[in-house]
Image 1 (cartoon, rainbow over the protein chains, first blue to last red):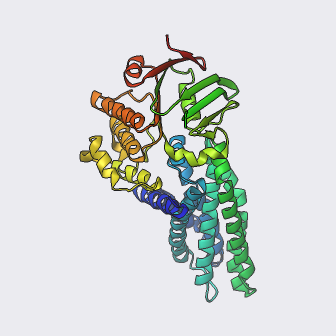
Image 2: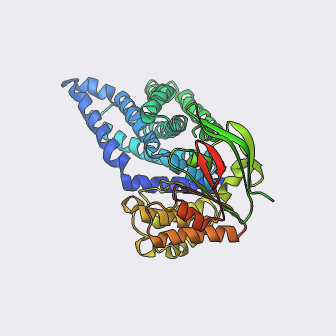
Image 3: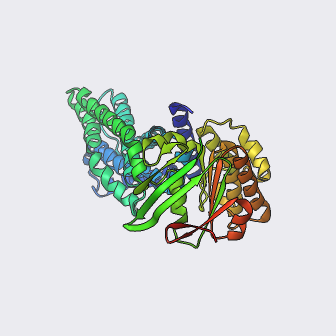
Length: 224
Length: 214
């Protein structure tokens, strides 16, 4: 079976499992929206401050809760399933790419709902033409965060407390994504050009993709 | 190929403790080998070495002509079938979906999944989620998967545990089908009666060493 056929099959089944489990939709997303709702309460009635902080809070909460979405596969990925995939002849790189695709689709949907919630709750004053850059940076962050989560899941496979360990790996490595995403909107507001920050996100995604595909096989073999 | 499995002085340590010591083993086409021994003597570890999922620390060997512990074995893994003592299924998928998924990933016509489900007697419960199915049903699903993928080397870890007579006969049929097609079968179990019935050669295992069954 070709690499891309395996990739498609892994992504398709991953999304089917997610649709049935509802981890992202029924657990992570509602808590993320609640976190968005609670934050303004700590600022009292200062509507200007709330409005100004909206985009920053969106990215902070998006990345923190997005980590849970990115790491959800690690929670379900046991040794038996890994062995089964190996003996079915699945290329570990195809598994990485397939999971990145399904995770990115989920994560992009997660960011879309969170963005709407932020707009409603914070009424931020956004610069003209904000939608396309925010959508683009959200998609790039979704891809990068999913790659990081999948990679961290592979690095910690077979270890005790892998979910906690994987979070510790993802959090610091997500910094370029946080900075790139938040600065895109800042640059738009200051009219200084968003291209450098979009390039930061693209470069991070590409570096993680190369690392994920290149390390997939060695990490799988080392996990046994 | 004279030998499908050929091990020479294989040793494996897990967590610093030796689990397999000086294992010599040859299995040819059409052979079915039984390995008997109590829990904890290294039977499952031996199967994982044979499945190329665990590289030996010492010794050398080959599976289907590829040297153990080298990248050569990656391409051969799809010709090895393993029935481990914990079922390898995705709980959120139905039994039929699990089979179609395995067929699809191994490049086999997914239509064969329905036929295989009928053969193992699961056609009436094919739409049941794996997570809500009994151990026996999951075992039958795995037998159906091995029927679809038709591996050259079949490795069975305690395959008779927890199964009714009909399901045990399915395992027997799978063994016969594999050996008749020129493949090799290795079964590890603490149940020597079943092993004697389903295999043509029997070894015993004790503290990580293989011995001729007396």
